[in-house]
Length: 373
Image (cartoon, helix red, strand yellow):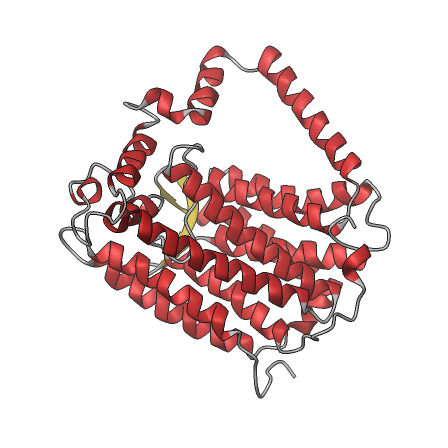
């Protein structure tokens, strides 16, 4: 049967996500003017939580069949390809489907599909996983999504897809020597293009992207204003509604890419510590559920989901404090946007469904199959 009569929710995981969603909503509601972002995100939050509980009752064991995931792969490729024909352009990227009353970004859900595909691939080949061909074949799946997303162009989502592949490669037990060899080839190829292919203006764009604070009046403006916002929060923050960087519109994208900076300005170092603790709980509970998977497929899916959240968190925080280039990567649960919030709860809902069939003691002896042990 597709649906179960009961489920097993990890309530600690679920309740750890709610303050994060609430922190985003409170920060959005503190902005001057209309409460448009707060009201719309509140609706998306309720829909996402409902989907989370519904999916926890679904039996996803059919995803262990290769035919199901191959079909999912081609449907996903078709969906991404159709964006170039029917997609809406927003801030220079043709990455959205607009249905009039709502819009959604397929790339957010493609990240979950990437995790499922790689979990299936590595779980089926864990005995011979050290062979270099598995780096190349799994990379082909991920690169297909990476290329289609990067061409939109949505470089932030493309980076996350790459990090999902890299993270799952590292925990799957592949040969680290082979992986290093693949990266060395890539570095040599990039070096050759830098010296013989790229024009001077293209090199300047790449360097500005890597070091945005070197051009604070141009490409580095957002990152510079974000670091000001984070630093001005000091220990206890300026108070809800008193963040000058966001309220006075100095900080662009303060409800999406830079909502962490807005939150830090209003809540200060203490608020940030609480926020980090909640994210730590979420990641910890995902890893606990992954370790109790009934097979390698469930375990790898949980590990991939942890990589997804860690990647989003690390890249977004790095951007907000000026350590990483601005790529448009959201922070989980907090940033405005229904697509990414729904996709996050979809991933957790699938994990809860897998938890319902998990064993306290793993059926597979994963100690020697994963994590390179």
